[in-house]
Image 1 (cartoon, rainbow, N blue to C red):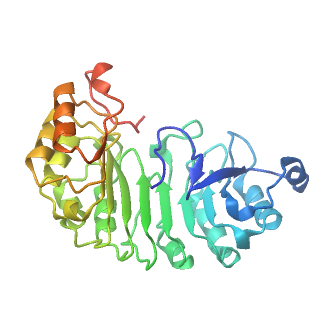
Image 2 (cartoon, one colour):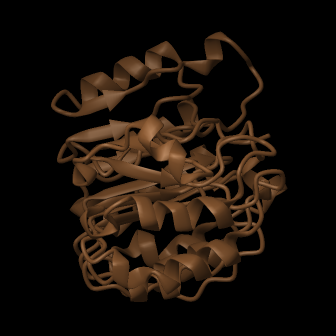
Image 3 (cartoon, rainbow, N blue to C red):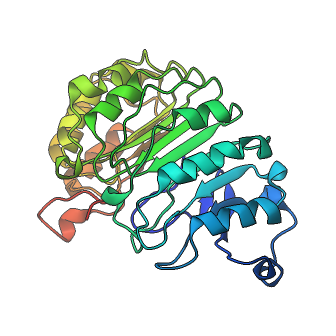
Length: 318
């Protein structure tokens, strides 16, 4: 799945290193040393500095200066350099107009904008449905930010991994994801966030996902950056979807002893290969219980926040 988001832009995507493309003039390309092995890079295209070159200049230069027929992975940065969370509707239109120039695109990430340019809650989005329709060969798709996002359930035959990174994922978007038609989906990461920034998804909003019926091929489920992770863990303790998983991820949230106790008292977790709980408030005694109960599971309990701060907080917020 796509790497953790805290503050920074991605350093890799789709298993490929990022090549940042934020140039304003054709003469810049020769100086930059644009790599010839286009397919070996994930290309981030967009403004990378406040008040820098705008997307409307960068994008056509990218189309002219890079053999986009060989691009396998694409991440889109800021379109408007000084209001970096806005302009996605223009960026989407530009990408859709050039869709036929990316016949081999396998992975797409929208709004790979770091916090130094904009807060995550300020990143505006448009319904990604048209993009999925325009790129039928995608196997990985992600987006950051959900301000003003209205999204219909997604439809795609080949998509295997879906990630939505946000400081507050609106419940209506969670419901839309659960009603999506993604028969090939094996990995889902949702940054649920806090109600303060538009989150607050509860049991009813997650019902389709937790039932296991929505995505029969699902093997990894990440319900990350959640405000009430203990309550979420209690839901997962009896959720049918867990039985089909190889990897369960509750990282970046506010998990404590109560949530872990609920997980251990629920359905068996010994079939998992990985349980990721990093950034947590789990006590040492409960960590020992986890390791004893799940000896064959790779349990990640890094970032024990209880040793630093008694007041719990999610990792991706403002």
